[in-house]
Image (cartoon, rainbow, N blue to C red; front, side):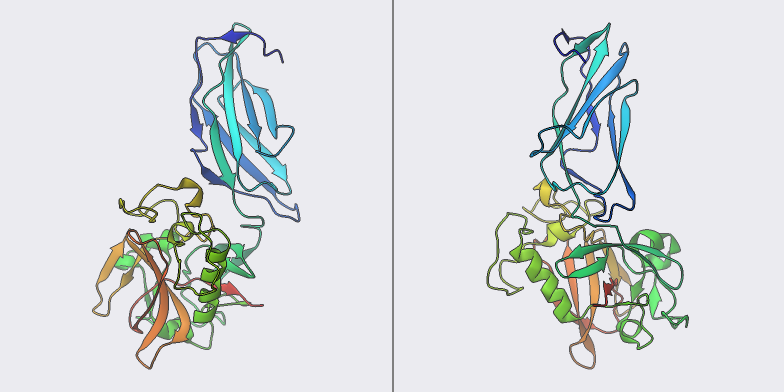
Length: 327
C-alpha cells in the first residue's frame, strides 16, 4: 500500500468497539476461534478502507488490511497476550488516494482464559466462566429450577424478578437460603455455592492486584480496608446512573469497568414480605455460610457505592447465586 498521498474528503468515524471497551480473549489451549468485530462510518465515495490494529507493545500490527466494507471481523486462535493498551484506526481510499486517519480508538481484552470453560446445569442452562485468582467462577447468575441430582427445587424457594420469567435469561433466579444450602447441591456437578471465606479470598485478591477503581493496591489482606472493587466486579451495562466517583452507576474510569469479568448484574432482590426491589440498583449473591439460625451472609454491590459489601440477611430473602468450581 502507498501511504504517501492524503485525501481530505472523508475521514471515517469509529463505531465499535467503543472507547475502552473490553473484548473477548482467547484460550491458552488455542482450541476455539476468537473474533473481534470492528465497524466504522462509511464514506460515500470510498473504494476501500485501511484498518490498522496494534497492541501497545507489539512491533507489528495484529491487523493491517484493506477491505471494501466499513466493517471487519478479525479471527484468531490462541489468545491475545497483551491485556491492555490496544489501539485502532481507519482511513478511506477515494479516487485511488488515501485520506486522513480517523481518531485513534482504544480497547482492552479480558483476562486470559475467560469464557474458555463452559458449564451446564441440570436444566441445560449454559454458563461462561472466568478464573479470578485461584478459583473459577461462573459469570452469569444461576437460573436452574432443579438440584444437580434432578430433583425440583421446592415451590417458593426461588422466583424470577417480579415473577416475570422474561427476567430469567439476563438476571437468573432469586433463591432463598434454604435452596442454597440444601445438600442436593443447587450448582452443577463439580461446582458449589461459594462460602463466606471464598468470597473474602476473591475480594482480597482483587484489592491486592490492581482492581480498585483508582488503581490503589491493598496490602493488609483484609477485605474491609481499601475495598474499592465494585466497579471492577459490576457489568458495564444495566446499572442506574449515579454521579458518585468510581461507582458502578458511573461510566468514569473506563478501564476498570468490569475489569475482573465477574459481570455482576443489578438483579434486585426479593424481600421477606414477597416484594421485589432494586433491579438496576442492587445485585446480591448468597454465600453458603450461615450467620445464625435465621440469617446468613451474602455479598452485594450497589449503583452508588465503590465497595463490595458483606452483609447478613434473613434466610427468607431472595438473592442471586454464583457458583465456584470445586478444587
